[in-house]
Image (cartoon, rainbow, N blue to C red):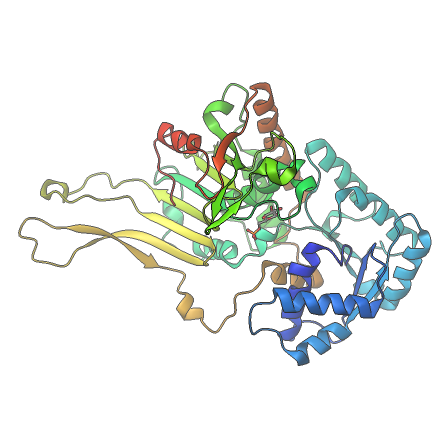
Length: 476
Ligand code: BG6
């Protein structure tokens, strides 16, 4: 595990591996060798890992017995990227496990190339080894190609596991079950019956100390290029021939390649970008983006887009994407609005019918709901009254004995077992960048600056104007 002392390792990777261990899913002889620049020894790393577990595991999940077993698996080798000797020490720590080795790179992408060269120099990049890569995989198509080429020089595509942690989220996989394990939705899943789709990832956090990274990225590259386009691809893709890596990823990439380019001529109509100013979240005053950064910036912390898919199924169905930092609440969902019924027999009596909606909520709760019209109980002497009622399709109560997992648990287990279905293939990443690069170039050439919004709000007023202009209502 490269980057073993970093934020991702402490918050997600170590707690996820602990979760797998606690469920008996790690082989008894599985060892975890952490490596990073910090000059720790194995005991120091175990102390850091224990603190991370205590801090980040859900309440009541930490058990001394499991922790003792888990921490005993950990080893640590400090790494100086320029020193071949430290790679030799790493190889020694890996020992004869190389035929079953999985490497997780949670480091800055600028280190991918030297790390891979170092691994190769000590025989840790052989045909047996799997390599997982964390985002950001580049800052645009060109830099992403460079990274992909450097990695491909040593690892074949079937051994590269590009992480998009949204694919490890339970409701995201449930979307596939909903679409492809039920008869009812698929016949309606097209432009004849769906009015539009909204994908929202709203966050209340700000920069969380990642100032340098975020300033060079912004919301488009940090969230839309990866997580939101993956969600869009899963909503929009054709049924794959099976739930296997090639079939699923073939279908996703077709969608990503069908995204209609947003150009300098259309960008003002098809997008809104924003940046948060000072405000109040949960009763606490927070500084604006410039304040957190310490200087003026044009980086967007909010983006809303109208994506269109140029294919038979989706022609004319807008996919509205919206994400931002320091918004009123943490709330992520996929919202599918069906078309109105063609004619209401109840309208004469004054009853209003609303279109059906399917809402797959990813955060804070993992739920799936269908908004349906139902009759309000009564004698209806003045005509039938209708009311929109939510149908709970997620049935969390039916699965109450299952604990809610961290997305990385699923992904780490798949990595260890060699199943890349929920990882992103090179052609997908590149299609994602191609579309995002087009938007960034369009924003620059149209000289569009981020609209200010106060922290703790729903984003810039321009996002409401955007919805009015496109004749839909954001689902909040
Ligand atoms: C990361 C982004 O990929 O996803 C972060 O870099 C963001 O900026 C995070 O906060 C959101 O993930 P989640 O699982 O909390 O929605």
